[in-house]
Length: 116
Image 1 (cartoon, rainbow, N blue to C red):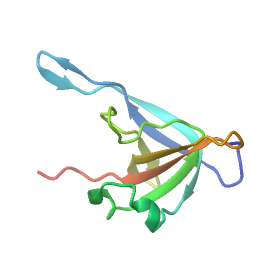
Image 2: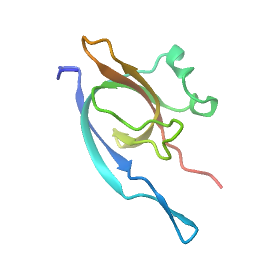
Image 3: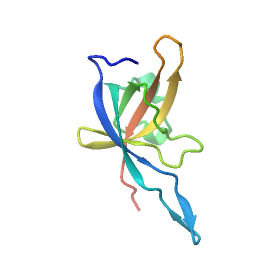
């Protein structure tokens, strides 16, 4: 997608692949990411693409040409995106490859602390 008036600068964190060291899991090191995206409210229809436990959280739908790591099979840690001081995890990805304006549609979900 070309730059547009409707896009804003977003920043986030991406974790490198983790590894096992002496039988213990060690997370990969974090790196910063920065990209342009359009941030929109998530529709009730699009919420159905999320796992049930994530549908009740605060969400946004973002559109960008920047490839993010979403919470899918094979991805241990989704990218985290910062919006207005809150951390969101990339919960769903839909690539749009129409050869006109190719881009990605992502649903990002407010990250919650793990309760023990």
